[in-house]
Amino acid sequence: MDHLQRTTEILGDLIAYPTISADSNFDMIQHMAGLLEDVGARCDVMSSPCGTKANLFATLGPDRNGGVLLSGHSDVVPVTDQAWTRDPFVMDRAGGLLYGRGTCDMKGFIAATLAMAPLFAERVGDRPVHFAFTYDEEVGCLGARHLAETLSERGLTPGVAIIGEPTEMRIIDGHKGCNEYTTRFNGLAGHGSLPDHGVNAVEYAVRYVNHLLGLKEALRARVPDNSPFDPPWTTVNVGALVGGVAHNVIAPSAQVDWEMRPVQQGDAEFVKDSLRRYCEDELLPKMRAVHPGAFITTDTIGEVVGLIPTDENEARKIVSELTGANSCDVVAFGTEAGLFQAMGTDVVVCGPGSIEQAHKADEFIALEQLGQCLGMLERLGARLGG
Image (cartoon, rainbow, N blue to C red; front, side, top):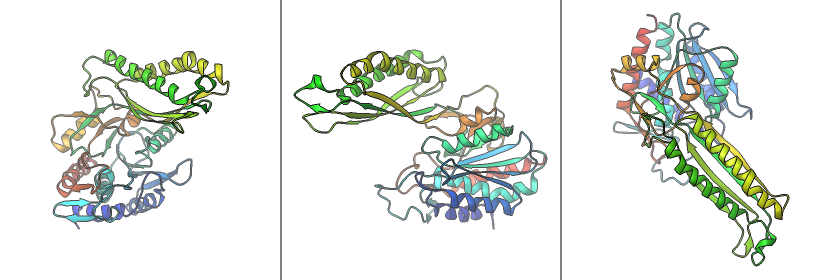
């Protein structure tokens, strides 16, 4: 069986696991661990704090620092309210395309690495090959954060990492961070005819949003020199503002869902510190003058660090040699790459499929893209013993 045929077979099995982030990925993790154990890999299934999900970290070769890490996330986004024309969890082949939830984002890359594992097992020398398959990337990179912390505690740092997000096999060495928050306002209900007798949570949420929009403009002036991103500054987006009960009721509660995408960590601190001071110095004193029990809380949904382009990047050099590409780029979407970079690993993002297909109905990956990915991995295998 050739590598593409084997990859397609494995991908069909992986698509059949409906690993939506809200649900368990445990069965798929166990399946992948079995495939890797069959070729001699040492597998560590790391349960999540909730106990219903897990990361898989597996190694071929010696237990030591360095080597190559191949990484992908096991979770997929929901299919609810999407107009699929086929069963999203049964892989369907039509022409040169493979359809199914997760085909490009990013079970296609995972399947390719698993199909190549027997070759890696034969060729591995004194530099290990690691496989890292994580949970909950789509909801804040929670699994990768857990994995990075565990590896750091063990003193294990891979030399280079390839994160196989769908880039159409382009080499990506930078992306912004992605920080998501929910801010809640609790006031005091009352009759709309007596506004001074209540604390209107919606009104205070609107003031908060106005302050946030002012910071959005201020961030343009903080753009670093030679920023490679588009747009080059840190962005802010207000995704939702929800609150209130009825036209004539003072709104007792409200909620703002918002995000920012930092190009530098200092921008994130600038925004959070300004909002904290605005709440403490302006909003809360006015709210509590009427109702001492009023409060504002902010929950961190996820803080995904960016991938910072660097002048020296061994992963970029190796993947360039493996693919023949002589250029690299940055992207707007976030990945787990920055968490591995923060460990001291050189990282690039490079994988099969297009981000244009991710998260959509009738998601697909082209067989041609899988073939390109397998070519890269085959060349990686050929140089493992060198």
